[in-house]
Amino acid sequence: MIRKIFGGAAPAVLSLVLTAALGFFSGRSFRTMHRAEPIFPGQGLTAIRLLSDYFPPLKNTHGDTEVYLFRGKEKGGNLLVLGGTHPNEPAGLVASVLLIENIRAEQGNVFIIPRANASGFTHSDPQEGNPQRFAVPTPSGPRLFRLGSRLTNPVDQWPDPAVYVNPAGQKLSGNEVRNLNRCYPGRAKGFLTEKIAFAIMELIRQEKIDLGVDLHESAPEYPVINAIVFHETSSELAALALLDLQAQGYDIRLEASPVNLRGLSHREWGDEAGIMAVLLETPNASHGRLKGKPSSALVVDGKDKFYAKASRLGWLFVPYGEEGIPLALRTARHLAALQALLGALAEIAPDKAVQIEDMPAATEVQERGVGAFLHPPS
Image 1 (cartoon, one colour):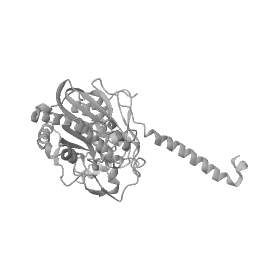
Image 2 (image 1 turned 90 degrees about the horizontal axis):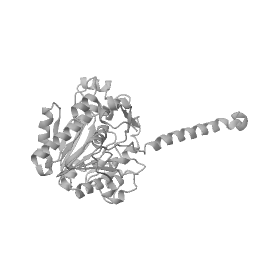
Image 3 (image 1 turned 180 degrees about the vertical axis):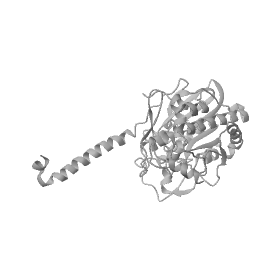
Image 4 (image 1 turned 180 degrees about the horizontal axis):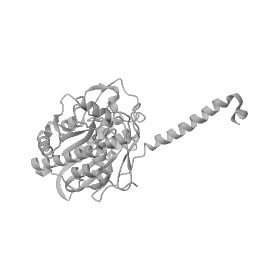
């Protein structure tokens, strides 16, 4: 029929129709990446703000993002927790969501930004084949979360310079201009990612944050892993937390923030705002270069035969067996480290103590899984 109507042009017409259909369905899938999955705050929530409340030029951009506030009944310190600085490191996002959906603040105030680089959640790393989402099993069915990119979406910020000189004066590869954790302390009139960093610094200054914790993951072959990276303002805090975590059986070590590596949260938060600044790293196989086929299962279960083999060959900086390193363990490590840091804070600076109730216990998250502490999917 098509050949009768269009004659010799039929193959070209058919190709155009198929191309249009492919473009339509691909575009529809792409658009869904701009819809953030819902978060269901627990009863302890005081307010939901936007990052643009602290820096209005961020309003109506894809860099604006939610800030969840939990105010305690008693006076104390102010805690900032960041997840999603790198949206392809899911344990930070999931740990933040677990906090938002469960905790109450008894003393002090807690500010949580689960998607620090919201733009980075709207796309995936090119040529990596990563899934757009990963599914966390819950008693009521799977709950989906976005798996984004390490960098801001180029649709929101383009082009990259050949060489990027960040606000702290460090020269970096051009695409690092879209890496939030290279853009501190930010620029009020800079690129979008620099504006996000500047807005976070404004939150730190305006809310008088005492302790900032940036949640990350890294590849098992990366040397800074299972680590507390600390600014010198946090050295005693980090040391006490380390002792606590090691007593609980966690294999973890301290890494001092290099003074000549600029633009990172654990350096600039301390230098520019004078707060106690800490970055936490857990091992994530889906983030590494030695993995097999990318999948939602790899993100959640953390099992990869190639990493298991690499471990046997001594190529990794963490033990990696056939059982893998699941999301539940990685999330539990973040929660345990946060709890240890808060315990240390109460010991060394009682007037800045932050007491959180109903935080999921790390041991239970490991045993029962992340989904046991998540709100049922909507």
